[in-house]
Image 1 (cartoon, helix red, strand yellow):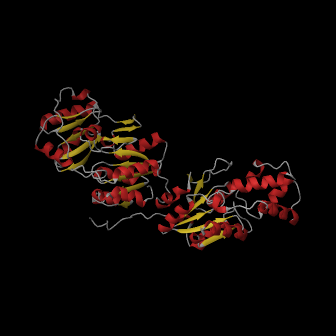
Image 2 (cartoon, rainbow, N blue to C red; image 1 turned 120 degrees about the vertical axis):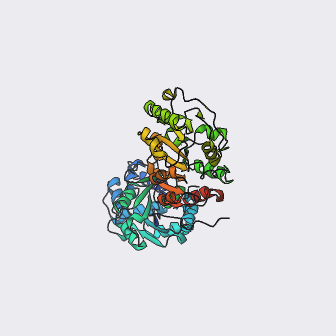
Image 3 (cartoon, rainbow, N blue to C red; image 1 turned 30 degrees about the horizontal axis):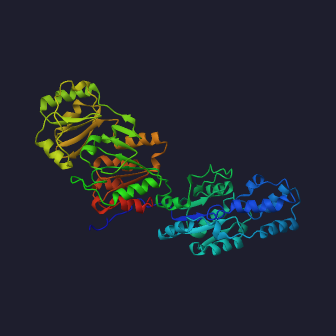
Length: 487
């Protein structure tokens, strides 16, 4: 087995601490509290409805009784405050029953990741400690802060600024998990990265949250990914999904990709290859993808629909025709539904052997100018390349062998294909993770929200990545997905 890479994380995650609200986040208490209060108050104040109490969600223990006095249309007095407390005591709550089932596994995972944990709740300290004690969560929170410690609690940011200070962390190092309008506003005002737990039962305004989650189980991935919510993953093929040349697929790969998809991440290819090569050579048996950037981004598809189609112009093809007639070099031509070569020579044989792909069929150059060509693979050396580019000034090359390059339009490139696919999916490039190893992957890794270089990647590719995983043969891809808590 190969040793782990000497350099693993190049860009450390900025998230060093996770701060949780309690009510509505760790425990699903808000419907219980509101329902209990409404039932007890309606006998004396029949105009009090559940909906009219929605604004109390997230209020501090100081502000809540004053709001309720106004709602009940009575003066705020010690007697009224006592009446509210007695209403709560009439229906004791068994907190373990309303603990979110994913809370404890999530906290255990965050602790195993070495992150600092804190709780900052508007509830009284006695209530916080009761909940944590009954639910067996006290061990996870060395720092506990209550809204009653401050003159003004949420939406005032002081509770979070104080918690950050106790943790010894800057706001940008803290992920805050909230749900209510006030809580989200407080976290955002404190400068933290706020992840709002969606709850359609209440009319919360979560617009100031940078992130939105459906479950607490998403929090470890957010923290591991530096606050990025990954919604799409792009994979190179050779040297990433399969071994270069031998095309061997790691045994762990199908299950890892299946788990990634089940976690809501779209799976897409980003490859220099043509779809025909992948299918005819059976390079990815049993794997299914939601979309792809084929031929270095010259042809991109999402859910079977074309998103990008970059064709080499007739003028460029005419120049190429003349160049090949003059030099006698071999070249492979990639159309949408077929690929072929003009001739077979030693260079082409060696190049195809390098990538483990069969020799394509032959076709005459007659009428080349009228064909729809997406990508070319000219077999030229570095010394011969300038003459080729001079003949085709609107194109660019990317070398992958001593005597072979990929040639595309200047509008092509994996990174440009990914950007177009993200637009089609309605997501930002910051919400992507990309994996690669070759020279044509470098810009892709730089552009993605998280760029992962395989352990077998070129050194220049590793320098452009955010993270370096193990080699493809040692389950590098699955290990990286585990590292970022995406599976």
